[in-house]
Length: 190
Image (cartoon, rainbow, N blue to C red; front, top):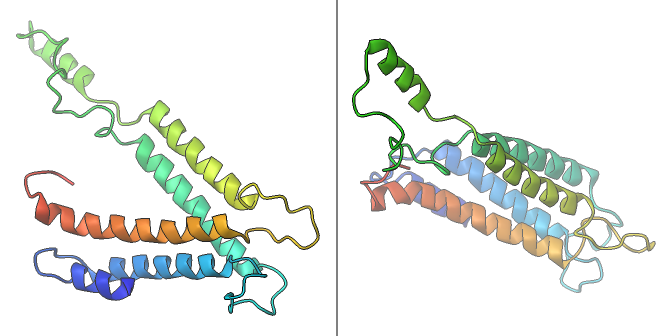
């Protein structure tokens, strides 16, 4: 269903989107949904995906781990280098410490160099990276469920199911918003 919605919204003339990002996001949402359904407990009556399976697929765990690591690294680097989130350049206080008239050209050039915003934020980078690392740790430890018993499997449980399903929904909502927001608010930069 997401594939059709993404394609319709992306190909709308007002949006000017592309079918490639829509299909990639659709595949990712489909992967999250399948992985969530595959993580249902084995003793659940409606779990028809893995009635005869005794373990979580190694391929599924590997793909999930790679996707998570790549997403964490990309998000942390992007968030750490973002200047617009913590200190917008058009802020009214951006020029509070500068003199109104520079004394000479050299001083003017020096002031311009000093006025350039820093292109990274260590604090924000570390906050995002620590949150993403905690998420990865929870993925790898089975959402803090004890797996010491012989019947328990890693990454199988209701918390894992719902985190993946809600992540798919959030991904779909963010993608649709990124397409529709510039049309709804043309005066803002996105």
